[in-house]
Image (tube, rainbow, N blue to C red; front, side, top):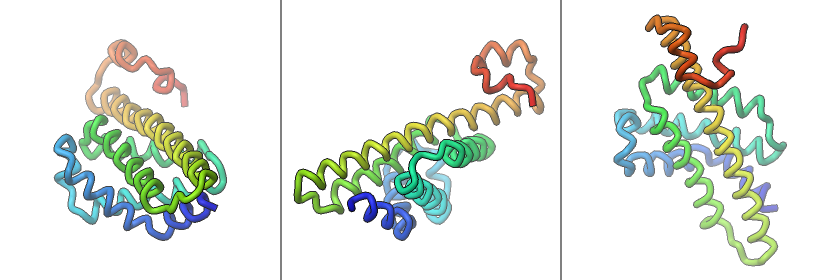
Length: 171
């Protein structure tokens, strides 16, 4: 029951949640790159995450969909000049919005509802943790590709700093 209400809220009120995310972004002095964005851009970005989270909570974890979304986000953010630390912190703030919503907007009037909410929070945390993993992969892949191509960094030097086999797969 709690899951269904949360799923509906994530889908229907994604922009409202994204506005709360935007407010957290604006309050975080560490997020200088995000500070340069207009409110609409921040809200649009934030609103795109919540329906994917809702689908994950509803249907279970789809690593392919999650990976595609966050790898693309990581690549885009790298191309836009964002530091990876800011992007991960921004995603963490998005997670905080959802957890705050669950903990404050639901009437947790019984032990059963509280345990249900805790289960949902656990699933939310898993979603965002895995999202940050894929986001980092995408960011680093875009960095690797730029360094190898545009910047003409040697393969030897790239392998020294990019130890993950993700970057050395043959296409």
